[in-house]
Image (spheres, rainbow, N blue to C red):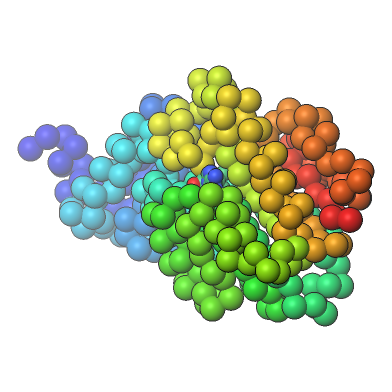
Amino acid sequence: MTSRAKTEMQATVRSALRDAMAELHRDNVPSHALAAELLLMHAIGRDRTWIYAHPEEPVAAETARKFFELVAQRGRGTPTQYLTGKQEFWGMEFEVTPAVLIPRPETEHVIEAALGRLGERRRTERLRIADIGTGSGCIAIALAQELPNAEIIATDICAVALEVARRNAKRHDVSERIRFLESNLLDGATQETSDCARRFDLIVSNPPYVARDEESQLAPDVREHEPARALFGGASGTEIYAPLMAQAVEMLRSGGLLVIEIGYGQAERLRALFDDATWSGLRVTEDLAGIPRVLSAERL
Ligand SMILES: C[S@@+](CC[C@H](N)C(=O)[O-])C[C@H]1O[C@@H](n2cnc3c(N)ncnc32)[C@H](O)[C@@H]1O
């Protein structure tokens, strides 16, 4: 019997966690202790409190084998979230698969900025919202939770991503207020509504914004595992914003809001797209690292 097989046969919660942490540390996995915990919680179907309350509990050999296989995959670079199939965003749990970007904490600033700028309209108005490039659906679904009066169209160019988003909407019981549309930007919605343009109160988007020549600067876990179409925004990284904003100008009603996430170092370049004849109240929201992360403005 190999020493690995022996370890798996005799594993307890404590030994499994200890061995996994050591293996992930050796493989230079960032936040290796957290990754080991999350994978163990997933493999044995228990929460963190249970794990630390039952260190001597034996782990069944088959469960231990599966757990160490997940640990090995994490060590080779697969993000923990694709192994557990989930990620938290805005206090909600989302299914994630390799077809969708793993929701990032900085994207929560999109939700904060949108809710902050809507102010009282949150409660009083029946809001019509579009989320462009919905991925897992995290932005659309968080907004649907926060805004019970809102009706949302969420688009993505990727049909498989939309399947994940639909399942997440169902999981959070907001399916009846979000329509998912396979579409380039808002093309699908524009075609459907030629007779009632300028109808949205809010358009949000976290589009792909990494420049092609920045690919080598991405962490390997991101570069090799997350979907390229969710990451790359053309040669400069900002190619998608001009067509996206042109559609927003067409589709937002007067007083409607555009809230977009942007990449590192893009704020000045993208501010220039908000001309004074069309937009007012341009604001830049920084993320927790002090990086300008969200631009928002009101359509005149
Ligand atoms: C950065 S990800 C954001 C996903 C999700 N909204 C989030 O914040 O986690 C960008 C998403 O836009 C989609 N996408 C890329 N180009 C698009 C386009 N031209 N039209 C619609 N969606 C697009 C990608 O498939 C991907 O799901």
